[in-house]
Amino acid sequence: MAFGWLFKPKTKQNSCKALSDVEKVKYLEKRRQYKGYKKQWLYYRCREEGLLETYHKLFDTEVEGQDSGTKFSFGKYRGEYVEAIWEFDKKYVNWLSQQDWLAQYLDESDMIHELLHLEEENQN
Image (cartoon, rainbow, N blue to C red; front, side):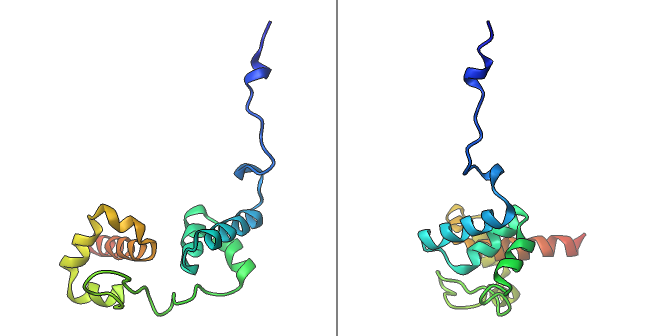
């Protein structure tokens, strides 16, 4: 007698696979609000999940502050643009990229790793 049906995982209605792209973005926005994350968190999360097109359809706007860049919210360059510091203190930015605690600063971490990736591409 086979008991495979006993152990078969059931798909829950609220599981990620059952959600449409619109529902996923709305869920991420609710999560962002609940956790108190900055508005840019949703943009970067949608980018990671491949949901940017849906994000732009829903919100029909650019991320607040995206055009002006990301500012450091910590450290000796607090309030300064990451891109500006990159231009004159790459050693500091490289050091930051190697710190484990940087992951708690989503905006800064994403921007730093993006800049490092762009520089690596330009060198090749």
